[in-house]
Length: 371
Ligand SMILES: C[S@@+](CC[C@H](N)C(=O)[O-])C[C@H]1O[C@@H](n2cnc3c(N)ncnc32)[C@H](O)[C@@H]1O
Image 1 (tube, rainbow, N blue to C red):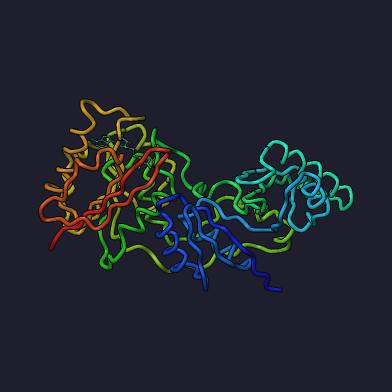
Image 2: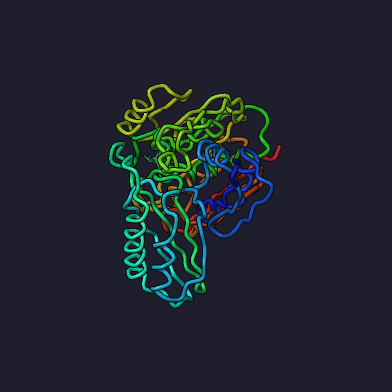
C-alpha cells in the first residue's frame, strides 16, 4: 500500500524560500506549508527516499508519527506503554529530543524518564527483533514536542544531518555548511542560462564549488537512519539517473592557504572538473565577463585578518567588482558590515538575504553587472 506520511523538513532559518523552490524543482508535492525553520509536506516512502538523495538545502527530515493531548505523567506513561513501537523502532535505546512550552508537563528530564519506562514496558509486551544487535544499527532519534498540552511524536529519518554528504572530509578552519553553500549556489544561479565560469576566490575546502557541481546529482555516500527502520525493510535505494546540471563551463577555487588546498585537492581526487590555484586573490587576475564569483571571505573571527577586517574586505570587494568584473558577485559577510558595501556603479543588487551562520548574523549579497 502506498502510505502517505506527514513529514517535516528542518531548514536553516532564512533559507525556507529557497528550500521550497528546490522541492518544487526536484521532488514536487501538491502542497507545502512553510514555517520558520521548516516545511511540512506529505509524501510516501518513495518520496522520502528521493528527497534524501536529491535535496541539498534541508538539514534533516522528520516523520510525524502520532499526536495526542496529555496533561499528566500517568497519561503519558499509559499512551507510550501501549504504543505500537515495533512499526517504527529499529533500536531499543533511541535518543530523545524533547521540548515543551505552555504545557503542564514541562520538566523535560521527567518526561524522558517516563517515556523510557513506558517504552521498556512496551518492549516486554512486543519484543524487538535482534537485527539491531546483529547488524549494529544506530539508535534513532525521536522528537517529542509538547505545545499547549498537545504532544507530537516524530521520528528523525535522516540520522546524521543531511549536510554531512560523505563527500569531502578535509575542512578548513571556517568551512561553510554544505546546505548553506547549496542554497547560495542555487540562488546565485537563478535565471542563468548560458554556461559560466564559477570562481571562489577564497575557497578554503571548496564547499561552494563542490555543492555547485553536485547540486542536481543524487547522492548516497552515507547511510540515512530510515534505511534501518522496520517500515523500510526489504527495500533498496535505487539512485535515479540525472541529466540536469547547473550551467557551469569550468570551476576555479583560489586560496592563499597552500597546505589546505593541497589536502583538499588530494581528498577530492579529481572527482570533479575543478581547478585549484594557490594565490592571493586580491592580486590574482580573474577577469572574465562570463564568470560568477562567489565566496565567504574570512570575517576575522576564526581566521585572523592582518590589519582591520573592514579594510581588507572592502579592498577584496572592490578588486572583484572593479578588476575582475564578473557577471554576478555573491558573498557572505557579518551583517554588522552591511553599510560598508553600497551598490557599485555598473552593478545592481539583486538579492540581500539575512540569516544566521553558526550563531552569527550574516548577509548574503548578490550583485549583477548591468549590461
Ligand atoms: C571562511 S574561509 C572559506 C571557507 C570555504 N567557503 C569553505 O567552505 O571551506 C576563508 C578562506 O579565505 C582564504 N583567504 C584569506 N585571504 C585570502 C586571500 N587574500 N586570497 C585567497 N584566499 C584567502 C583563507 O585561507 C580561508 O581558507
